[in-house]
Image (tube, rainbow, N blue to C red):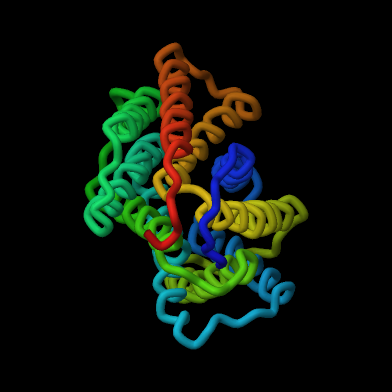
Length: 295
């Protein structure tokens, strides 16, 4: 992935934001279209075909010295993250899992501070914390059920994705964005395959709606979304990219209201506005800083 110094624009931010917006539809598609109780199979069928399609189109191999880093990124961004994501989704209410995942921007700030000694500004720290609090107001309720293993999986998944986002920007790659994305999806899918075989029941004969659901998750939810995501990583500061991930649960809430008739209370609506404000604040603050890839 070319890493020449790039001055980010708001169009880069908007295109990158489309990725978590698309991911926000995953819950609706999964619950309404897919066969139940096959989380790892859904993750596998989402990423593996998309990776194959991108690589058949790009047909470009990594340099010999890139395979190790590419394998690490594939595990962090795809394999481990997807597995932990579904463990958390099955053991926790969706709202709690999303709130725990909202710490990703803060984790990216800590990585940049600890590794590069690049201390984020107080404004960015405050916006990140406010984003987590807004997500809590939007999604949590007094009846929220806590599960130790689910919480651990959600925190580990957030750490995995935050680290992958940070390292994808820091580690330089000679691959263009399409093969860079394709190899991660392919390798991550190969990591998920034994997990799906071990823990999920075999697929039944699929109907048209189920095939459509899997195709959407792969073509839109993986191929398009991850290309936009890694394109954004190459152009925006890691914390700016990570904060855009908060748009995913926001889109899930909006779709639940529009398609499933789920209500949004006054507190939840206030939380939604606060989260949007937090995302915009991080983008604005990051746009004032010229960040060179690779540190």
